[in-house]
Image (cartoon, rainbow, N blue to C red; front, side, top):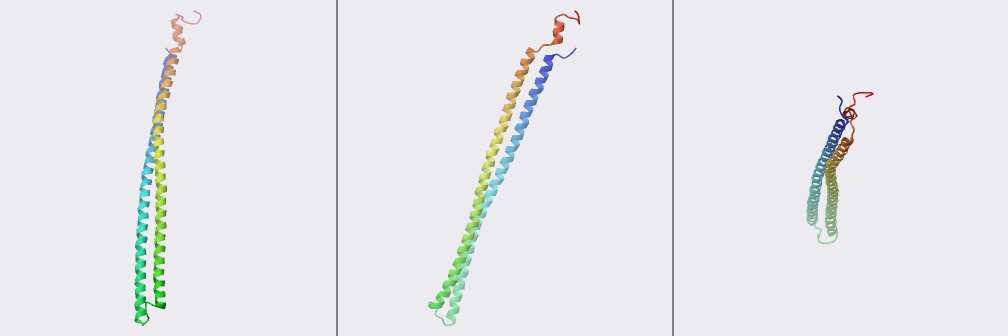
Length: 193
C-alpha cells in the first residue's frame, strides 16, 4: 500500500518548518557571535584610549620636569658666570656681565619653553588619539547592539515563517486528494469495473 498524498505533504511541511527554525537559530547564533566580537573590540579600544590618556599625562609631567631641570641648569650656569666674572674683578651688575647673564637665563628659558611646548604637543597627540579610539569603541558598541537586534529578528522571523509554512501545509493537507484512497472508497477494484 502506498503512502498517501496527505502524509507526504505533512512530512514535507514538517521538514520545511524544522529547517526554517534551524536556519533562524543559526543566523541568530552568528549574529550573537558578531555582537560578542564587537563588544570585545570595544573593550580593547577603551583600554587603548585609557593608555593613551595616561601617556598624555606622562608627557606633560616629563616636559614640566625637564623644563624645571633646564631652568635650574641655566640658573646654575648664570651663577657660575657671575662668580667667574666677579673673581676676575668685573662688576657683575653692570654692562657686559648683565648681558651675559641675560643671554644665559634667556637661553635656558627658551629651551625650557620649547621643552614644554614639545611635551604639550605630544600630550595633545595622545589625547586626540584617545578621543578617536573612544569614538571607535562607541561605534563598536553600536554595531554590537545592531548584531543583537539582528539575532532577535532572525529568531522571530524564522518562527513566523515556520508558522506560515505549517499553516500553508495544513491547508494543503486538508484539501489534498488521495487518488488511491479515493479509488478504494468508490468500491472500484481495478480497470474496467
